[in-house]
Image (cartoon, rainbow over all chains, first blue to last red; front, side, top):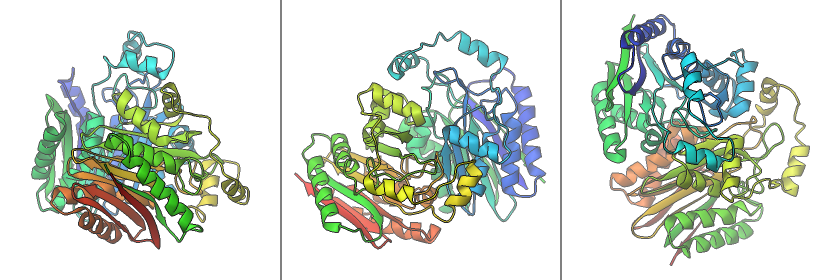
Length: 282
Length: 282
């Protein structure tokens, strides 16, 4: 099994070594699994449970004071599942897998996604706040009131990005997964690129991709689909990542990062100050 | 202004002439507007208000007995907005436009999207049932109970498709919009391709596209983005629609339809029994 994981594209983190150790553990955990789908789920779960990453516990807080998680997963057989806007679900990637495996759908949102996940054994009702996110939220002086009042407040604050993701391949098939707590100070109910097929994640027989960064812009550029198309056109994973990121930069002028895996190996690219990744092969 | 609209790809409708007259009126209404964004919004609103189309009033009923609407809109300047899983919103396309114009986001879901729409003057709390959909739902013998019980019930029933959409261009810029009540007998909270950028709709300087059909499969193939990429590669609108639909058929073996508009005119393609469209130019 060949696995690459990322912990989000962004600024220079406070404790890069501790983050890197967790990413290494996530990649290694993925590499011991028996299928690419198991590999990306288990790798992402390691990152969702670690509060240094904006996914699961430690996710961003929306304008009504609630942490909501989104995730998507897809295999090269084009099985796909995604979930969004779920309060209290640490392992959003597992909820996305429930959508892929247990429903005829590819996307379920909100409390219905939470109920579905719970019905198939995914833990819900989890406190996704950390000490740090609770303090940051308490200091943010968020308004009560209508969506337009929230928007006025968040317009100067909305931003940041950090997402986790993994792509795995076993020489025959691939899987890709992405999971996030979203961006800080987003309007309640906001959903970014992560659960949108072709934007936050994509997978095809040629390989898979997982994106991170300014989600609104990633969706406008369908960044993950773009990278996989470059694989389909014959590029290797690194060239596909570089080309997709160059196109993204030209189209949007915005910030993102991308991991890509094909039969010959892994590639990654980003236009932020940093994006930590880890690769493991067994 | 040049406008093309569709009323969904599917079987042979009961009253094709009445549907065609409404589609013609939608296209003509769009063609009298002053911007492509106004054109697609006003054209789609005509179709959302007509109960013969599965969007707005007359939308499909989800497994908990609620009609929820989804929509997306995008311009060639890559302004984009989408909404999903909204109870009681007839003009989902207008709610999507609120996301595009009033927020730094591209996608807002659930009750939060309803509240946002209401705050910017979109009517909410609308009864989206028609006599026909109320009867069909009453006859469907839906279970109470957990999501897994709903899934067992809907597995044999889920399907059908019908969506409305429009693409407009004024010689300088384009806009595309898609709106739907989803597919019949979907799990509560299910969202399809319609609000996903690149799947149900996409727009770029080369032109725009709006898709309809089996939404899960459209999302797996990112069908609208696929058509616009073919425009970017130099195909005309009809060739781009044909090529994207051929690829979709090969990839998924599923059913869909597509309208495409570029500077030289409109194209459409579908692999179902029928897809009604209308074109208007002023």
